[in-house]
Length: 426
Image 1 (cartoon, rainbow, N blue to C red):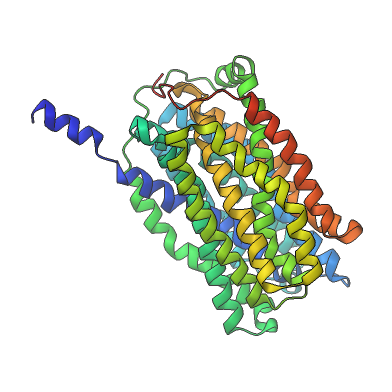
Image 2 (image 1 turned 90 degrees about the vertical axis):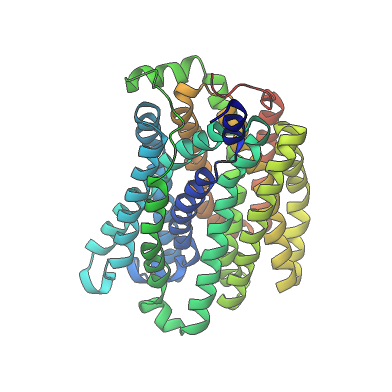
């Protein structure tokens, strides 16, 4: 093969890398997110209470439990990816999410096995959180390390786009299930169907990831303690800024996911209408995440992180006010689509800028820690806080919570360096 042929071969976009990241990442986020879509029914099955609000809060609290094992997954699996390679870590996360999803889908209700039911569900959520905590770092590292220099943001944007794809597919399946079954059937067994669907698709993700090219040529560190010490000393500023940036993204991503519960419980909409809203939001996140990647390659990371976040901060109060005032299906769709598309844009550009701030030897660990902590502290508590705020202070309190966290995130974005031209192989 000639030198020219080698150059052409090297510049070919490694489609397997994108396919592997999308297939596994989408399935893992689908499994994690579908829980929130059926939180009402899951609460009735595993956390029965005389007050439906208490039952829902219990289910949402367990939804949050999955976030609190993310830092552990980020440390353990991220470090594993920096020592053993990106491919091995990405195979491990799919195996873990399979175990967690099986636990949710197969556990009998509280009525049948008593206290063992919620205990198993909590453990299953913890395993799912462990998997997701370790997924983002290795997948993000692999995507930017395998991408051509002028397409790194577009490649990395598939991380956020795959999350939108997961939400969209979850919404489609949720709509199909809600349309086909009665309220009683949904509560009794119908909510389990979406989890069983994902279990059937997981072998495909494993097959694709087995053929994934490795992008970590030679590990620099073999000691977890040494890696963590360097990250939290030498790269402490990058970690703090990354967490602050992802804080607002995690919260507004959960707003998009929460809109199904909000539509059913607060606005008293038909569950099928709420699922349509979810499908639209997932589609917007998918499309605009990819658009953000293209724009970030052309104009830089910071501007694409910044302006969608500013727009969302300014629009969220009037949008939620109009939604509550009109109780309109159209307004529900508008709010969900705007929140998800703007979140997708700032999130996609963040998930390339943060890995680019880290050296290749520590990238998977560093990104996993930043993502896991940011999402745990703010994404993990978000739906519980949303439900509590709306109950005690009304729907607009949700908007002001988003405004406050957005201000902090904007400050962090302004303090970050522009990483468009860094060498990610260093």
